Amino acid sequence: MTGRTQKSAGMDVFKSRAFLVIAFAGALAACQTPGTQAPDQAQQAPSPAQTSDAAQPEGASPVQSSAAPASVARPRAAVRASKHMIAAANPHAARAGLSVLRAGGSAVDAAIAAQLVLNVVEPQSSGIGGGGFLMHFSAASGAIDAFDGRETAPATATADMFMKADGSRRKFHDVVPGGISVGVPGLLRMLQLAHAKHGKLAWAKLFEPAIKLASEGFKISPRLHALIKRDRHLKKFAATRKYFFDADGEAKPVGARLINAPLADSFRLIALIGADAFYSGGIAQDIARAVTAAQPNPGGMTVKDLENYKAVARPPVCSFYRKWFVCGMGPPTSGGITVQQILGILQTRDLAVLKANSFDAVHFIAEASRLAFADRNRYIADPEFQEVPVNRLIDPGYLAGRAKLIRADQSMGKAEPGQISSGSADLGSQMEGAKGLSTSHISIVDSDGNAVALTSSIENAFGSRLMVRGFLLNNQLTDFAFVPVAGSRAVANRAGPGKRPRSSMSPTLVVDGAGKLVLSLGSPGGTSIIGYVAKTIIAALDWDMDIQAAVDLPHFINRNGAATDLERGTAIIALKSSLEAAGHKVRTRPMTSGLHAIRVRGGQLMGAADPRREGVALGD
Ligand code: GLU
Image 1 (cartoon, protein in one colour):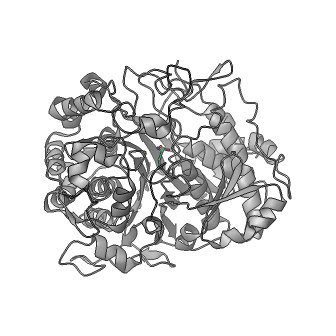
Image 2 (cartoon, protein in one colour):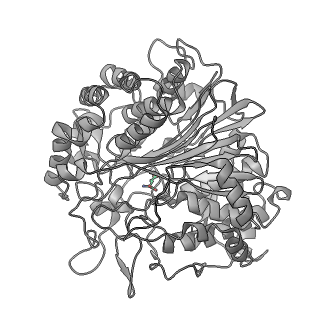
Image 3 (cartoon, protein in one colour):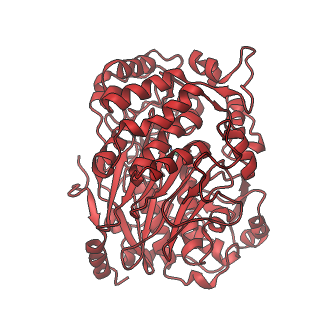
C-alpha cells in the first residue's frame, strides 16, 4: 500500500502559505532502564567552564578555540551573532560546524561536519549507524526541504518480531541489545542527499574534523562517562567492552582520552568514496555480519538490505500558528504533525495573556497535547505502508473542534482520537522511544541565511550496543509497536519488511509572514520531544522569551497516558496540587531534553543550548 504521493521534495513557502491562507479560515530516572542507576550528574547542566574542561581539545583555552568564536553559551542569555551560528550538543561538534561556516560552507555542510563529530564524541546519541531527519530553509527562495533518513526494517522483519511464542510481548530491554532491533541505517544516505542539493564545500572536506578527533582522541565528558557507567548492556559485547571500559571492567573516567582508530578509517573511506562505501562492500558486510551473528538476539539483515536503502526527500508538513508558519517533518515521524496539532489546538486561545509556569498555561497545553497524542497514536506510521491523513490532521477547522473538548478547570482524562478515517488501531499503552537519553539535535544558520534543523538518533543510549568499525548500530526497530494487533485491528505502527518505524523526532523551522526565518529548533527526548519543541515555540513566540530562557523553561507534558509529567527539581512542581485538584494525575521526573535553537530577529542570530546536556551555541 502506498501513502500520499510525494510529488515534490521541496515546498515554496510563499505558494504553500497562500494555499494555507485559503484553507485557514481557521532521563535518566523516569525512563529508567531497569537495573541501572541514573546518576543525577548525567543530566545536570554543566557550567560553561565544566563543559569546556571536559570536551575542549588540549591546548585551547576553556571556551575559545584558536579561531575564537564571537560568543559562547551562558546559562541564562542567548548567544548573539550576526553572520552565522550553530547550536549543538557538544562543544567539539559546534566548533567543527563553526569552522565550516567560517570557511564559507553552507548550513548543510556545517551540519554534516558537526554530525560526524557527534558520532565521535557523543557516541551514545547518534551517528552513521543510525538515522535522522533534516529540515532545510533556503533564504533565497523561501523553499523548505525535508529529508528522511529514517532506518528501515530488513526484508526478514515480521509484524510479530518482538512477540514471544506464547503471544505475549517481549520486554523492551530484552530486545534492544543485539541484532534484532537494528534497522538499516539512514543517516549517511540522507546527509549525502542533502549535500547534493545544498552543499557548497567538498564532501571529503567535511570529514576532516571528525577524522582528526577520532584518530587523536577526545576526553570523555561527564555525561558520556555517567551513561557508560550506568549501562548494563555495553559489557556484553567485546567491541564496546574494550572501547568504553578499562582492563578492570570500570567505566573509563571523565577526562580519559578515547581514540577511535576504526571510526577514523571508516570516515576516511566514506570521505573518499561517498556513502556507497558504507552501503556496499566491506563495511556493509561487517554490519550484516554483526547483526546476524549477534548474541543475544541475532537479527536478519543482509548486504542487500543495505544496498537497497534510500533516503527520501519528502514534502514538509507546514501550517500557520497565529502569524507564523511552522514547518516540520512528516511521517514516518509523528513530530511535525503532533507539534502542529498542539499549536493548532492552542491557537484558539490567547496564550500571550497567560504566564509561563502558570496553571492555565500548563493545563491548556497539557490537554492539547493529550488530544494530539490520541490522534498520533492512532493515525501516524510509515506513509508508504499506511495512509496518513496529514492534511486532515492539521486542518484548522478540525483542530478548532478538538479545542472545544478542553475544559478550563478540569482535565478531560484520556482523550479519544478524532474521527478522521477508519485508520488503524491505537497503539495502546506502549510508548515507543520514550527513554530519551540518546539522540541529538543541531540547529544552524549560515551566512546566506539558509538554515538547518537536524535531529539524529541511534534510539536507546548506545543503540543496540553493537559496534562495527568504530560506530554503534541503532536499535531503532524497537520504535515499532511490539504488539501488531489491537482487538480486531492491525496497529498502524506494526513492524514489516522495508518499513520505517514511527519516530517522534521534530526538527522544526518557523518563518514569518514575509517568508523570513524566525526559528530553527529541535530536541532529543523520545516521545517527549514533541512537548519540548511545542512548548519552546510557545515560549519564544507567544511569550516572547529570550530563546535561551525559552529552552531553560521547566518542562511538562501529557502524552495521553495517565500522568501529566512535571520536570523534577524545577519551579513547575509548585503547580502539582492545583493540577491534581483539576483532575491531573501528576508525576515528577527528570526531563532530559537537548533543545538546540536559533532565533532570528532584526538581523541578529540568537542561539540557545540546553543546560540539561553538554551543548553550546557558537557564532560570529
Ligand atoms: N527513537 C526515538 C525517535 O525516533 C528517539 C529517541 C530519543 O530521543 O531518545 O523518536
